[in-house]
Length: 230
Image (cartoon, rainbow, N blue to C red):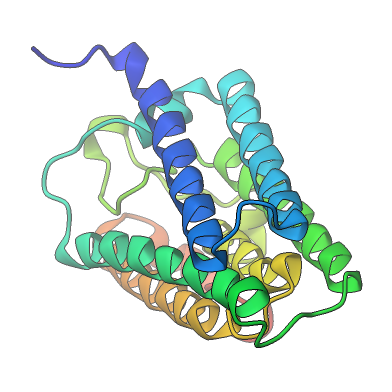
């Protein structure tokens, strides 16, 4: 029996919470201790950001929340690769954080970097939520949503870059090593950044090829991800 559409939004929220819990477990498994205070503080910041995003969507854009949890056929190979690589790198990041800062003590950034990380999380949360509120087609996987009268979004943050959601993800990824105070976690974090850039390129190419009006939009809004850069 098909899952009621009213549960799709809840499924998406649960997916996000499970992923965060998995990441947190990896942090403390890597650390070999459950008493690392900075680790807990960083995870609380991430949890608060996740709750704010989902509550805002539930109130301001419930259809977008539902669609992000809705199953769709024909997931593109690059999307399937992205999903698997994202989970693998997130697990790696969590393990490296714990091993770096607690188990082996390879590095320990000062607490002032925690504040910088919080600032980036705030920016990431604002930008990502704004993008999802503005774009009714903000689904998890790339597809031309002909069933939902897919159109080009040119308002809000989409006036400045074509993929503000990925820019928000980039900011959040940079925040990770700063929040936890782990220098070595910047290695998997950089791989995650490269993954987001790659997916941005693939999604942009798909939209240029198949979405009516996107080519004109790309000429007007020149930057895909980073303002004044690319």
